[in-house]
Length: 636
Image (cartoon, rainbow, N blue to C red; front, side, top):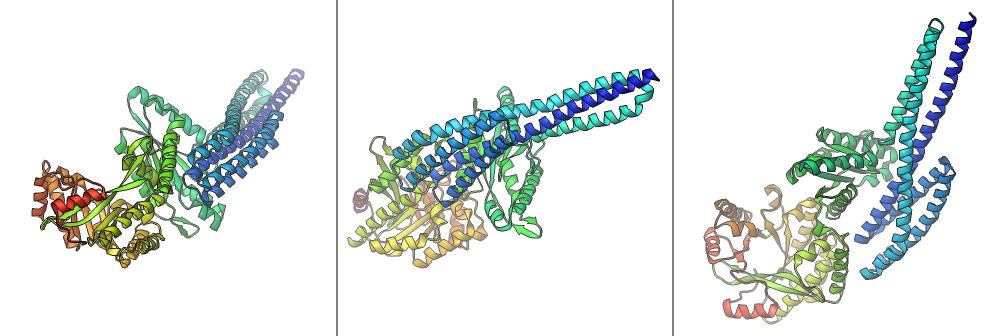
């Protein structure tokens, strides 16, 4: 009995000490996870500040400025939580970061003010390089380093709890063997307790790499998986794509219905994304309403298919407490290039996502040539803004002629830019950049001003000629655009029928209801409307017939392929018949030779345009060409 009592007392002592040690380790592990999460929130906030600072430079306005201010508050709250939960080193770091962040907020305010003043790019870049980037870089490095350190500490603490649990369990079992008869019941209790501790440790480890709301992987785990996928792809020669998805109008849901509805919406979005992906794909929530998707793929077509599948999944309204919410998404797609790291791939997807959002498109693919974050592109955009203000742009004109009579019907105005140091810049070098920024409005206005000024000169000379101008998606989706056109027509004294606006199918389909409203207003004014590049978009015939469009321009790719591709010839003939059935004038652009011109005349195509007739040339050269080759009959 004495021996058994001593054994029992010893067992109690071992269990007590082991439980205290394990419990303390579990508490420390949980605290480490909370501190690590606070740093993660700070890291997410600082990434948001950087992204919104870049967005503000591309598209200034109250929305990105308010979002930037919200991110500033989130960072301050996260660092205050670090100071409350962390040790003395964390409190010291929080104090430093908050002081640096105060300096960064003041510097970014200077930067936003410079953007609002439309300062030259060099001035804005100087402010960013001298005042914003130094403070931001130090602050970002401090937070990321601390976040990585505490994440590692949280994982180590969780692992330590497991090791302590195993050790205590072994000691307990050894003691139980010495006093088996007395401690069988105690062993059952202790084993159950240790199992709970092990479960808690695994739970803490899981929480460290998963989003607490949606249970999706968080940024840390997603970056780790993306890194593994990139290394695997480098060995196998496969391809990796990253999709970055941001919800549109999510802020409206939060502001109108409250954050509870916003959280329920995010849960439904997470479920739809899971259901629309394959087992090999991975989806994560990076923070806020931003999700990331990792796709091991064979090429672009597979990435496009996955993106369209996600688009279909997001199309139906979300039902939350019997309220139907229509919330779509903007998706940026980036395909990994050899040697790219995780951060670069995510940045490319982020650039593409903002491009899709700015263009009101459901998705966009990252293209280096359209990356407005490239310094050379920023400089070029600054030069373009200066060139527009200084009226340095010029127009060349390409005629459209009647296939039956050979007479001039109208001309298309095409912009040219002679850069003072870089020489002639082709439109495809600067127009795609401008379309992603508010500069496109100034560029469109300048082209319209030049075109209408020339139309007035021709009209005054007794030679009224309709001039066609290409219109961007941004202009087409601007409800104020028709009034702006009327102001320009009045200012130049040009009749509306002497102006033709050419727009693409893609632009029209971006927001069909708004586009239809704008087009109807322009048509009511008497402006001629034309669908450009027909055949390359995705408009439906049922929608096309509702548009007040008078002209259909068949894309040059089909015209140039007719001679060698019977299928293209069939498409062209069908487009001609379709246009005529809808009561439209049909134009073939890209006519390069007399045979194509003859074939188009035989098909009944009304007008032709291309190098076989005349290249785009300045107005004076066009006048000489008309005197030599054609008899002008005026407008349509």
